[in-house]
Amino acid sequence: MRDPKQKIVISASGTAAGLENCIRLDGSSAHPYADSLLAAPHIANAADLADISHFFCLLHGRLPSVFDHALGRSTDLDMRAWLIKAADDFARERAFLTKLTVAAGPITSTAGQDQCNTLVLEAGNALAMLAQSERAGCAFGAAIALASDWHIVRRVLDNIALRFSAETPALQLPDESENLALLSKFAGDRATSRAIHFGMTQMLAQHRAIWDLMESRRDCRNSADS
Image 1 (cartoon, rainbow, N blue to C red):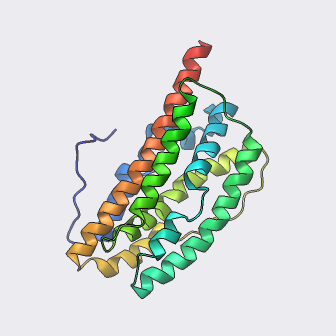
Image 2: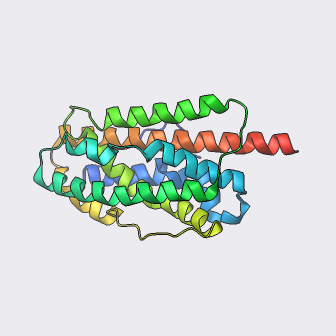
């Protein structure tokens, strides 16, 4: 696992390279727990799956979404067009999350249960604040990192849907190639590029915290059963 003190360096190509590095080094696929679920989905039990659907629904199931908030902070026409589509696409993801959470059933109570929900709600509030930042580009960075990382999260959610025979709608959020193409537009503006990169890293940090929480809950349950 990458040393948490290691900093991602933005190359001369700007925010596009920054996004690639963020997703590769700090995205959900780089988290050991998420990676294990992608590599071997059968290892997760029902309690693990309920946790994942529940906590991601708690994090992203409310309105306004990160994309909605960011839309209110963006004036660039290309940014706004991207955010409008992403906000519409993510509305379908919220509906999917809600149905999946119902299908997976209630989460299993573990030590510190009340604190778990509070931590996730606080993470959601942190994302909302990030997506409303007045620093030009910061909110957009959070939104574009969420769209890119959601393709990884969604693969885990799709496996949960398969396990519980839940309907899986097509994912329509912009993919990383679309995101990189848009980000290349802002590579020449160093201030905006840095703000976008900051928004990216902060958004991904919240996802890592959620994966950490769910991994800890799984380990707690496993210890109790052994």
